[in-house]
Length: 107
Image (tube, rainbow, N blue to C red; front, side, top):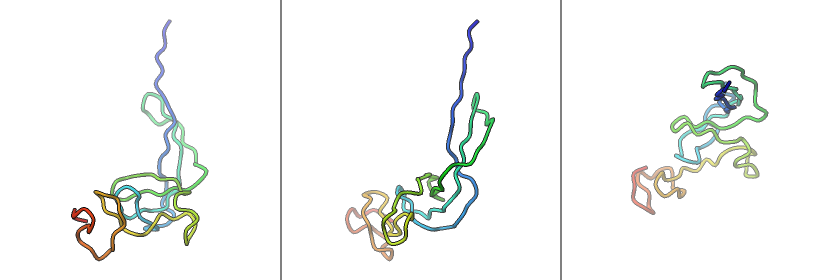
């Protein structure tokens, strides 16, 4: 007899702890501090959920789930950088600019 098994553990976002505490590393959008949870899936169906150990940052725009340890050691520990970045070249830009001064793309 042959059995085929499809399953795995996935990390997801739980409830929001703080809103708009930082900026996304990928797109520069607002990121919320959220609780994490791990989900056991069998045949792509969630079977069991349990809480994760550390909170993480979830981007409102692109959905990136970044670990809470990113950005630690700066002014406020555990926050992602607040300076806006260009989506095309990833350089820090002034929040008042509408276009990136380095590559010219719209912000």
